[in-house]
Length: 295
Image 1 (spheres, rainbow, N blue to C red):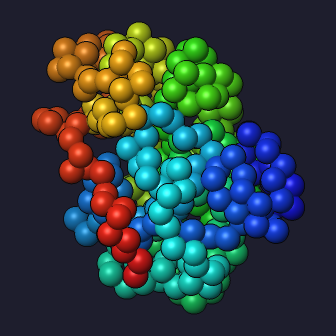
Image 2 (tube, rainbow, N blue to C red; image 1 turned 90 degrees about the horizontal axis):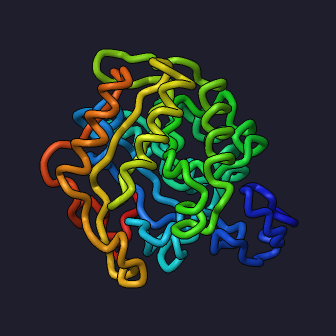
Image 3 (cartoon, rainbow, N blue to C red; image 1 turned 180 degrees about the horizontal axis):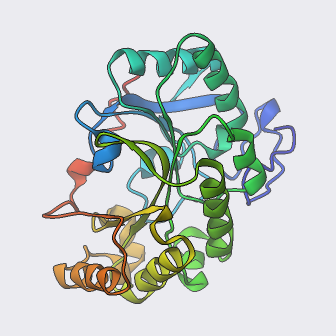
């Protein structure tokens, strides 16, 4: 981290000495929330919940981010590697189905160390790597053998959209390479009963007015991986205060838009998929990060 290049931003910040990277944080681990979480896909949340650890900061920082308060590094408690390992073990004690690392890319070296410590002390739960997919393959390779389930986004196919909303015109190129590495590491999905124990679930959240791009994302994923991955097609886009500067997406998606994308997915033969029913696009799906909860 002396010249940080963990993510594709390659900002070279000396995070080891406390400098702030593009991700908004130094090398000190900051966590905004650690708790059981019921709002992941069913085979990840299960009946007990996923043991989520929400890390402060983000290298992508999408303008519509639902976790914006922590993505911009406004919230979060500074903890040690040993404390992070302790949190993993406490989540296991609380009967979490897995350890879910949310937006972890900029802390990968510390996470590797913390997982090693926790495993030596009895951690046996599957580890979920929950990411926006703006990841370097070299960084992901540091996690091989430690992560069991990858939960990446595939946000955009069109570079103009990724440039406007995530300041990342190279998003699809980067994300597609990252997802390929994830599939290489963990292989095809493995279930134990109704719980996912190993594999890749790629998320795609539909943006208002952008069903064409959503179709392109789904076609790419299905053409490339077929039934070797699961795809989660999400309608929970929530326009927050920041969207006033982006009027074209300052609304929820319509039922018609969502149905159009689901119908397309079915038409091209996608079977391993999760869909959202009812009104999921509401702020109740966004944790209250102001009320910091660390186990």
